[in-house]
Image: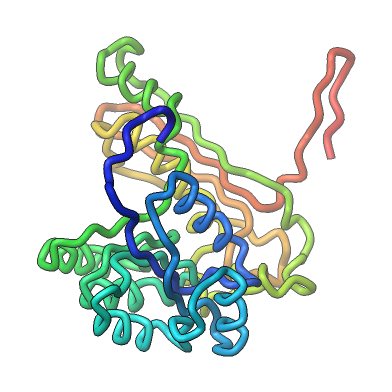
Length: 277
């Protein structure tokens, strides 16, 4: 909210599952939630280690009695309080999202979940139906979709200013994991472990962002057919891919391509030449 009117006369009582001291994304959730003073962090189950999570929560100013050992006790205890939380962020490894989101909705909470919401369309349909029955909001944090340029592009496409969309090129490629960094970095290790991330690495972790942006800008385009080539250039990551190329066809005849990578070491370009590595 920039120079806008605050829609609430009070902040939402908010909790977190995960997002503790070793989390890469927890700080971002807290910064985003608190920047406009629309949420107050009152409770959480911040870490799989209960004592470590309690200490972390206290450093955030959370009452130690409301720093819980697990999400089950968090939801149960907060539901029993007249001042219990109203919404929760889920910032845990991917394989836990579905169960936590389902429990949160059943506890009557609004849910903000890290991607992916779950591992199957059947689970997603179940969460949507449950949120409708409980009259609660559940959403995934694709924050780029709120950028002004994305919204402008959406309006331009809707108004026909670009004409028929024929070609869609998507890319989310970085080189931060060009080496097996997970062997030394515990906070990265789970991202390349099928037990935690499911059947995919970069397609599930990176490619979902540009795919969602295209759906935001051109919601009328529907994918009818696709093929994908997946590679594990760091061999220890197999069967998970750290590089992928996807070709797709849309229902209006348009062609789409997507490159997603964690091993793209990049390039530098200048007026006299280019350096690739």
